[in-house]
Image 1 (spheres, rainbow, N blue to C red):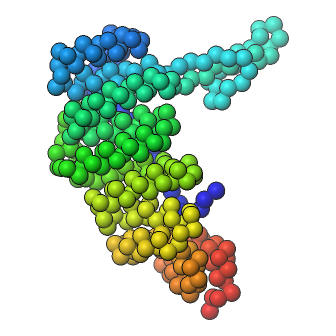
Image 2 (image 1 turned 90 degrees about the vertical axis):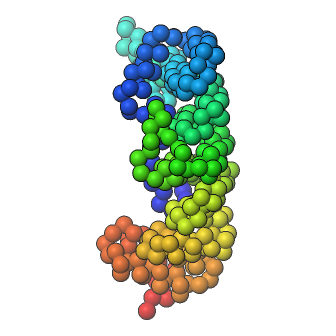
Image 3 (image 1 turned 120 degrees about the vertical axis):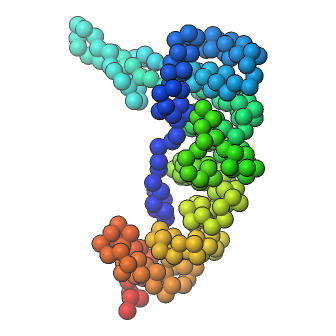
Length: 302
């Protein structure tokens, strides 16, 4: 288990946000058009009739996501089973019922949103929806590519970004876009594999082009280097983060670890002791105390 960074994994954003009007339209569409073939047929008809209507893409994509949910009934146990089947005579379990998404149907929903993103590039909700759908399939490569596309669109004109029903985004649109990408970076790092770590770092580096002093992105950029024992390279990103937020204790902790690995135990101990002094009794302080022990710095303590 990797323990250099304390990543708090946030819930992934969903395509269909909890907005009643959109929810009503999706439900109405699903009632009228049942099954994958019927949904796709209506989508094809609709985009011919109203090529500039985002709903012609968004509603069918949401409907396909609902249609993708499968019920599997098998003999024996299943992971995440929602019910078991028993023999009424013996009372013994003979099977189980579980729900799960059909990845092929989700891919088809993604394809609709990919086309929508090209046609309505200012719609951040559509761009986010692509990432969310790929996450449902645990397709890390597609999540990375969708995140990079979102960042490329954002770079052109962040002020033009819009949300569901073309609504203006509350607050800073750039921050909203970056927050969505950060959530996917956390998700990619959660797999703890080198290829997904690289994908996370690639997204962080691209995002840093839009926000070069963002502390969380700088930390994300450093993490893969630290995981790979590339302490010097990782420390360079962390020192940039320190300039922007000198009292970010995660950054200070990670700099200390890098310093210790590079042989500068005095710097490592100084930073860890500063954390303990600044926020005594907190989780950050306890982690710093543990690092002093695990890195063999206790003997150097004056």
